[in-house]
Image (cartoon, rainbow, N blue to C red; front, side, top):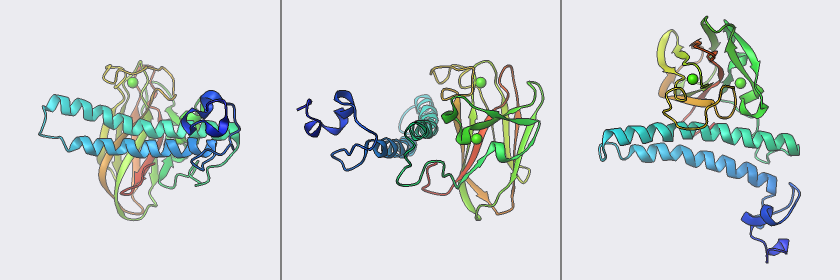
Amino acid sequence: MYENITTTPDNLVLWFHHVNYTHQLHSGETVIQHFYNAHYAGADTAQTFVTQWEGLQGKIDEERYNETLFRLTFQAGHSIVWRDAITGFYHNLSGISDSQGRLRNHPWRIEAESMNLKGYKPYTVSPFETASNTTAIVTSSNSTMGTASAVLSFPNGTYDVGVNFYDLLGGESKFNLTINNASVGTWTADNIDTGRLGHEPSVYLDGHSATRVTFRNVTVKKGDMLEITGMPDGIEPAPLDYVVFLPKGVVD
Ligand SMILES: [Ca+2]
Ligand SMILES: [Ca+2]
């Protein structure tokens, strides 16, 4: 059964055989399209764990509730980092586009490197697939604050606002996100430094350090001014990748 490619189950094909990216699986998908679809589906599913867990609030002890919520929230954000890294990596290797046109198509994102920068400069991330548009921004020095701003052109409405940044070991940068000078949220890149996450630490901008913070139900009007300030700390130059304004039901 396993010697014959036509009788090998889809989930074992790459274990027993070498095939082209365009090999058609029993599911009807090609191998490469399966890579794309499975990673998009996985990231979609990971988002639902947060809201499922929130259904337990008040039914279990607060410490357990909060610690697990913290991890599920991190993982929901990181599943998008991982989705984009894997699909970007294999797209680069295979040269074959996603049949659903999702790769490098992020209409709700604002790349940090495309914002108006003061005290920040673009930084080419390596490996390239661990930054949106292969580029992030870092502060010009390790002791001075940076500011990134942009005028919003999204339709008026309520959005979940995600900010993708990098949390390196060796510094606890502080960030503040405002819209029209009103604070939406502040956060500190200290998950790694405090050991709170307990995952592989990194001193680089890469897939280990890439992290998302999300602020829910933010009201936005066309023409609003978005501004993020980053205060570097230690070796960590308050690195930012992108901001995403998610309408209800959009995962990106
Ligand atoms: Ca850090
Ligand atoms: Ca970017």
